[in-house]
Length: 181
Image 1 (cartoon, rainbow, N blue to C red):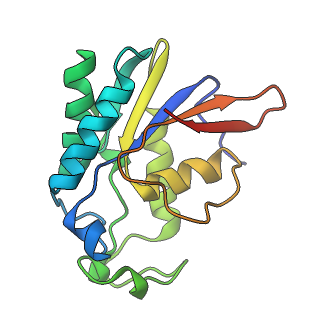
Image 2: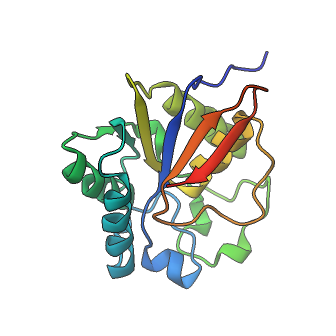
């Protein structure tokens, strides 16, 4: 049986701002790396884009890069972020802090989290998102991939950009439309 995605109405997604790992092409995964200067600027720009929006809840990964991005938005909107542990990025085990090119799709590296385990954990996390109007999820590229797969979106040719708020809106035909804010 396939689980039903938790969203029936609009929601926003924001990948954390840039880190040195992103800039250098390294796997951050479960490593708790901070935003770099560009990432802090991206988080502030995202907060400015979301100012005055209908966002009433911010749910974020427990990893510092997501928490700090969420905090920038929270300061502007006057909302306290809700940390959801299951929204953390995939643990890549032996590949943490290594070049991204070493990852092999569908393969679990030594000491890492399997794709299925990550998918199920992320889905549990997404099911914890609650909102009256418009929730904002601040997390990772892996979270975005699981979310897109769950919503039936075509796989992304490129990773979701750091610090770019996206609005997901359900269409009348049951598909989802994504636009940047």
